[in-house]
Length: 266
Image (cartoon, rainbow, N blue to C red):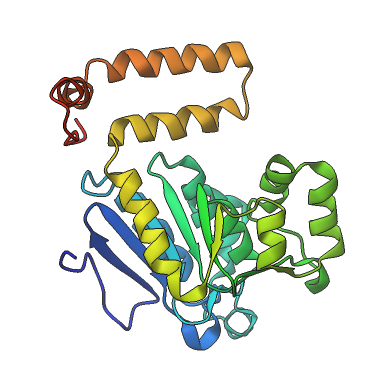
């Protein structure tokens, strides 16, 4: 492991850079990693910094303790410790789910426990999810709210309209077996294997050509809102750019020399 990227135990969000993988951990275990204090602004800042850091090829996103994120900290909101204006209409483009949606750097969620409301939306907004057998999703409808941070857009695309309606409108807790059955996680693993498995997946991604990985994510994201023809043109433009990179030349050379490529992201 490398030296910490930024890891003050008093911070609400911890980060550590490990061989091109930035581990981002929500660090309010005594409050079930609820969205309070500086969590929103910290996450947005960290994600934006990572997106422009060439040393970061993958983000591994998790929570400290027994929860991933229990949603909005209502106690902090009522006491004024959390600025709800940071989540309002004028600031929505600066919130973590919106920042995550625009990023080309892949984000893998190590879903270590409960993800409720805002936390569920952030987990679903990741590109891949490795879930612990202790993971659970808690939709917010029974709290008189809706999945306001991407869930209503993501769920119909992930599981189809009928299943999304069932999840959102009934508001039943989804245990790890439900998450796996619905295809909302790439894999469910024993709790003590979660971080090792997630890191193995993250490292596998990080050792692929980073520019190609980013282009793949970018064109898939764009494809959700475009026609087949338009997306095909975008993919071809990306490929022509990738053909000019040092990484593509390295891939060809490594193939001819029968060795593993060493990509530099250029």
